[in-house]
Image 1 (cartoon, rainbow, N blue to C red):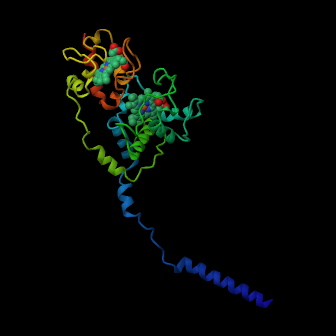
Image 2: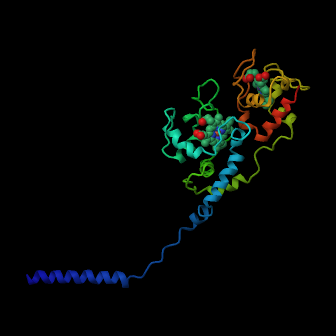
Image 3: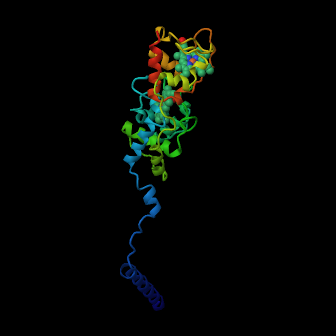
Length: 272
Ligand code: HEC
Ligand code: HEC
């Protein structure tokens, strides 16, 4: 028995010694500074800066304002998108896989048809197909970091929590946005018409043109600006009698800068 007690006493002594040692004997280790690289690449950008980057992409490279603008009425306002997302995901018409507001917004950009806001679907599809282009493809082609910045901006815009993690290459993405746009904006409507070869199919005023599309020389007399805008962005929405659908390129919405579209529409509307 006394042998057993000795063992217990010895064990307690050993434990006490190491406990004391760990308190007083082991030198305190300073918390290591974060690795340099990460501090430079990710830590350099605050969430506010990342949101601002998203806005820049929204207004610029993303070409989002071509449709999402207060005057066009062609696309839903996005000021409540982050709040509406919760209802959309529960809607019977929802065909996506998002589980959070962030995922819903991201999905809206790359798979626009996962949920089509009522009344905004492609003409004739009963709101099953979105006219919005995939922002990760085509001429918009946003990178992963750019898409995430736009989602952060949309969350901030709707006043919901910004949950997007800032990707490590956000700094490089921000620099890329400061480069001049790939194409200089056209100076006027005539230049646009030449650049986009509208006269390949249309006669437009003094400019001779092909008969594939309707003669636009006096188009402003019968069509208003809203109709013309739609005719350029969504050529198959209204097809005039005697002309074939699917002939006019449906890509102008992705190619034209928002202001160019308005210049072109105003020019056509004035042809009377
Ligand atoms: C050619 C026109 C067009 C362009 C360009 C466009 N959108 Fe859209 N967008 C729409 C239309 C129309 C809808 C509504 C139909 C739908 O739900 O897909 C929509 C829907 C959305 C929605 C879902 C809204 C909701 O309440 O569910 C988001 C988010 C969105 N767009 C963001 C963007 C962003 C960001 C860009 C730029 C990268 C962009 N859109 C570019 C036309 C466009
Ligand atoms: C490859 C041929 C082609 C090109 C290029 C083309 N269009 Fe068209 N366009 C058509 C056809 C065909 C129609 C009629 C069918 C339709 O509406 O899709 C049409 C319809 C239109 C209409 C509607 C006319 C109406 O009365 O409904 C407008 C406006 C228009 N085009 C403007 C333009 C502009 C601006 C450009 C250049 C940026 C352009 N088009 C380039 C073939 C073309």
